[in-house]
Length: 194
Image (cartoon, rainbow, N blue to C red):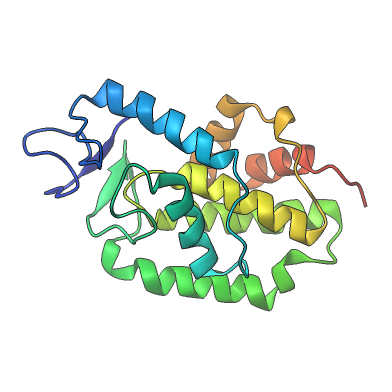
């Protein structure tokens, strides 16, 4: 499903194709190239950091630096996907600050049993998704950040077990206030039992 954005300066005039460093103006081609470039970047070590907002932004920059000059920067337009409207841009930085402060206050979920961790991580991920900090690539950067967070918390995730369709459905359910399916998926991906 395509994203909608009002008065979108990120796109070439008269199109929904994102302006990019390679000058690609065909949506299908851009999607293919974006997948190839971000997959290659994902195969590299992710940036190190403190699991804070700056670290989250650095991961987005790392994945999308080859394609978008705004990689790692907060989006400046209102955006939605279907009937789901994401955080208005004027509130993104404040909401990210609150979310990551709460993550720090929770000691990055370390010391939790696996089931407790899955619930906390699902709540964090659901909120991060509602904020939707970037114009493009939120799902990829959220998952990359979650991998680092899970490893640091002692609950590394086994992504080979991930069912993309189930994950998408769980993310949609979490957007609508039901984080249980997402917590169940994260519990199933956690490699340690406690």
